[in-house]
Image (cartoon, rainbow, N blue to C red; front, top):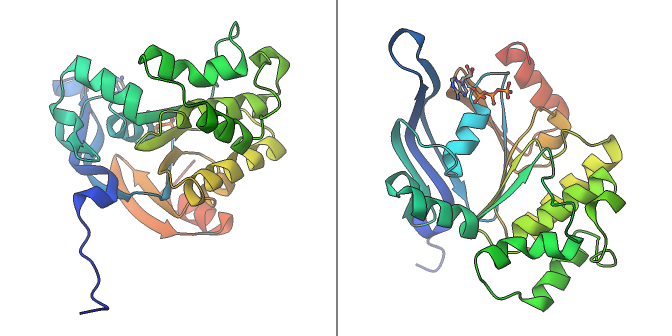
Length: 252
Ligand SMILES: Nc1ncnc2c1ncn2[C@@H]1O[C@H](COP(=O)(O)OP(=O)(O)OP(=O)(O)O)[C@@H](O)[C@H]1O
C-alpha cells in the first residue's frame, strides 16, 4: 500500500526509558526520585522536562544520559542499553555519543574556543573534521572567535561554545540541564534559537531540563514530572500553557 504508515523501529528513537525507577538511600530514609517512568524520544526532536523542585528532573536527565544508574528499569541510547554497560563502556558511550550542556558552561579557561570545542575529539583520539568544526562554529555564531579564550566572551557566547563542543562528536542526543539558567533574556533567546536550529537543521535530538516556561516553549514537546512520575505532556505549547500546567502541579 503506497500510503501505509511505516511502523516505527528502535532506530527511530534516540532515547528510550522503560519503567525507570531510582531510589536514593535505603529503608526508612529512602527517597523514590523516579517512579516507573517510561518515555521514548524520537530522533530529531526537542523535548523539555519541567516539574516542581524535587520532582525528579535532574535524576531523569542523569539516568537518561548514563550519568546515574536506575535502581530498576531500562535505558536505551539508540540501540545500546545503557543500564547493562559496565563503568568503562558507559564512560566511553557518554564521551562519544552524548553531548552535554550545563548551566555553568564548564569551559577550560586556558584553551581557545576552538580547542574547547574540539576537546572531546582529542580526548577520544579522534580526527578533527575541520570543515565540520567550521560549520559548527558558524552555526553557533562564533566563526570569527575561534582563537579567543572563554574569559574574552560573554556568558551567552560561552554557552554557545559549550553547545558547539556538545555537537562536535555528532552525538546521539544533546542533553542540556538548565542551559539558560545563568543568562539574561536576550542571550537566553539566542541559545534557545540555536537549540531549535540544532534540531531543525542539523537533525540532532535535544533533551533539556528547565524551570522557565519560555525556554520550554521552544521545544516540540514538554513533559512534566511530579513526585518522580510523568504527569502529562504538551505539544508545542505557549509559555502561558506551560506556566498554567506548572501552577496546576503545585509550587515551582
Ligand atoms: N544523591 C541523592 N541522594 C539522596 N536524595 C537525592 C539525591 N539526588 C536527588 N535526591 C532526591 O530525589 C528527589 C528528586 O531530586 P532531583 O534533583 O532529581 O529533582 P529536581 O526536579 O531536579 O529538583 P530541582 O528542580 O530542585 O533541581 C528529591 O527529593 C531529592 O532530594
